[in-house]
Image 1: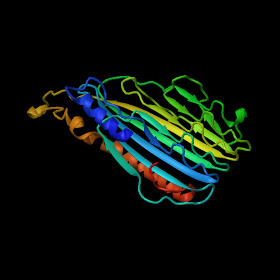
Image 2 (image 1 turned 90 degrees about the vertical axis):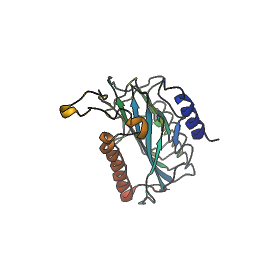
Image 3 (image 1 turned 135 degrees about the vertical axis):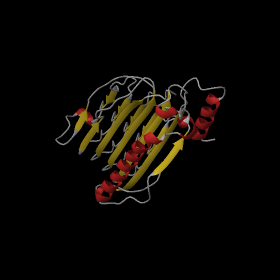
Image 4 (image 1 turned 180 degrees about the horizontal axis):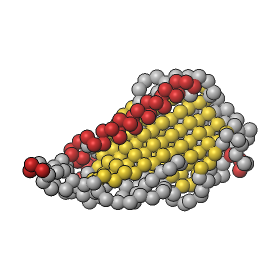
Length: 274
């Protein structure tokens, strides 16, 4: 049985007799240990939407992925459409682009966007970060590069761009986290772009964006005219994202599709999940 199949079974077993804690899957992996032939270009994109109801314990997630590859620094186009997968559990461990693009002269672009929607009350905080350590041959980054923020935190929420780009005559490294927010109610970890593109003369662009939203729980109170307010408390458990989240999911897919358009303008190509 595959790791994903085991995770689905585990999630089902957790739900027997009531959910005491959010169901979780095995790590969702993309572009791990591949495209190491040298002179290759790869662009791996992933959007993860998690849904958690703190009252019922109901969970679901939708993962949208796109992988494009081709020769480094060439104008290529993506084939096929993004892959969309829906699960009855949270996708809370993400691994992408580790040990990848190790051949000389490679170019690697990898991005992860996480959107956590939590029904109930809670608070958010900035994620801890561990990135850009033991990379780029410990040399100052050239103009046009960035490592924002440059931090070294053990057990961080976001770990990326460590032990990478150590091959000499490297071109550029740009690793960012952006204005991200997480919550202890739904912790998600991202591990990407580590031990990668060490073949020399390479380029690395790696980013993580994490958004966490709290939405009010249904109260069950009666509104004007006797209509029940929030009478769809179990919608998340039955169908996953509720109607009020539909625009958020549509926006995530639209952003990924917009990325496809940018790829058609000049990023490496190859549509498949690896």
